Amino acid sequence: MNGNDATACNLTQHTPKSVINVAILGAESTGKTTLCRDLAAHFGCPWVPEYMRTYLQAKWDNEQLTCTWDDLLPIAQGQIELENKLAQQAAQTSDSSYLFCDTSLFELMVYSNWYYDDCPEALTQAALAHHYDLILLTDVDIPWVADDLRDSPHQREDISAYFTSQLTLHNKAFQRIGGDREERVQQVVKLLTSLVWF
Image 1: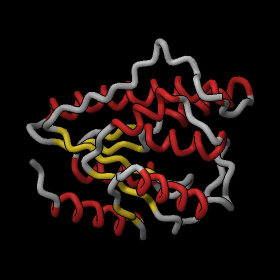
Image 2: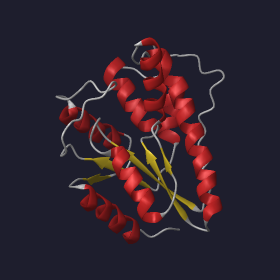
Image 3: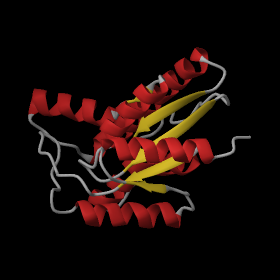
Image 4: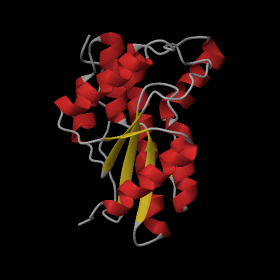
């Protein structure tokens, strides 16, 4: 299965040095989008929506179809284009700015391997090459909320454990984030203020 046509796919990450980028990963319905929005509001900076949701919601609305292998690289392309665009905007707003990313190509890679036991090589290479100043993994401590795209209400703990194993395997340092909305924001604020940026 590995090999999805990547000839026209450019998954290179372009983050200006002045931008501190934060990737928020985790199982479905664990508050990633809410945390991104709350952090962006707290710091007055941009955040990157999860392109996969926009892409797959349109596919569901138009065709009543869900994600397939052939969707992975188009989703990856859309995600990194959106991230790069918003990173440039963040750099223009101030000398030093945050960019909060609702998922990343690493998350797409993890889900590809979870569902297909495989991942397009171009996606894997990009996911492992991309750098984030801080990676957060959201805890499974809030209720699952159904929508058109979510399908794993009883597998969130297993998927979260798989994220942990993959982040560890690939030497990606990360921090777990849990609690209510305000607690999560304060945890991240504390992490960001305690880090030393070079």
